[in-house]
Length: 273
Length: 316
Ligand SMILES: Nc1ncnc2c1ncn2[C@@H]1O[C@H](COP(=O)(O)OP(=O)(O)O)[C@@H](O)[C@H]1O
Ligand SMILES: [Mg+2]
Image (cartoon, rainbow over all chains, first blue to last red; front, top):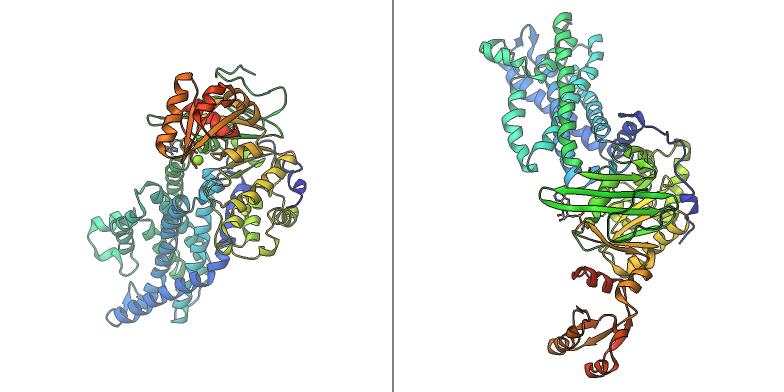
């Protein structure tokens, strides 16, 4: 065995006497851990996030596109192409929030380890949520690239799309975390998916415009964060509607903030006895 | 410092205390998992929490990192009141959890680097801190192996090294050798022993008597969330279990006869599998010893103390 004195000659230097509630250092520590882990799986994740929307795009774009040539003056394949950006964001964020958070908390005891370091519950969850959102920002672009290949003309507005995806991913990532803290077991996610995620997904205006549906459906869509994401993405591509887009953005900000608070509250109760 | 309400005298407290607990209570529903715990850990020493499963050892450890909030009582870790300033305390302590939670899909080096970041080792020192930790854990050759390919002993060494990467002033070890085979356990003991001799304060929980006797300067015997005795291992044995025990082997009837003989004389006995030990045997009258037949004398140990104090046995 070896000499430990090098390791143990005193407490760490550079540790401030007082530490703030949400510190960048703690946040970046957790964030860095996620990046390190992601370096092992990025290829398979990237593959899935490109192949899936491509299949969706081709199946709906060409399948339905044969019947419906254009929607609201937009060629159907471009309508779908912009809509599936939201699909990619939803699926990459809400499931990561639900399953990964649940597994790390219960089976792997990862959070017990991290919370024994100078990281508190809000920092842990905000950093993991931010990481989910960054991935959503990147992978949300995949369907758009596919749509460009299939004829969607590139535009400057598209540069806003990663940010729209980030903001949406943030809300859904926190929502997933929150669910992971309130479900009785991992099997319960099936119910969450059928009863909540699927309706959110279907009634977001991804595959068909909601204008044709009953008024109450159109009204309740205002409560669907994914609908706001879809609208913002389409407007970024086909032309901004400043006042509406401000509203959509605010809705997504409120959603992310509310979900972050709910997530922190639910998981603090589970993680701290 | 307030005086301890417990029946046992507090440990020496004229030095700096790395840990100070007073009247700490933690309940889960009706269960009092920790029930008025007083503890002092003198800086630079190793304190053992010795108790069976369910005694409240892990719950105590979790309260020291702010991962469980006590119902009442006072906790100071490295001078910081906890849970109020738990984060400052955590920045200066290393925690080795009871259940292993390494990142299996990362390499040894990556695990340590991630932890060095979480534990705020300044960026410019990180590479060296990780290298030093790998040397200490004897994992240099496995630096770039994924954790999932390591043996159980290597994982445990890595788990300990991970808690040392920021050169903590205090280390908490929750049952550091549970489930390891004796050879590997020896390696871990050496590691902990070096840690203590290098001036780090150590709080270690265990239900292995031998571990507490070998590594701890002081031992607090815990049962049902309370400290029922404390002192150096030698003091505890001397005060509570005397000098030696007389151990008899044989069929159950024989063991029963030994128990029936000494019980009326006020002597305690303890069964371990195929044997029974008569405790404080040095005080047995010679004619009783003769009547008992052939037995073997052995030195009294902490396990005897535990049985005498609680009537319970430690596992294993
Ligand atoms: N989160 C919890 N909820 C309910 N009971 C708990 C919880 N944690 C521990 N306990 C109970 O508290 C008691 C002490 O547990 P623990 O501190 O793990 O003991 P030890 O580490 O000494 O084996 C046990 O009876 C255990 O079942
Ligand atoms: Mg335990």
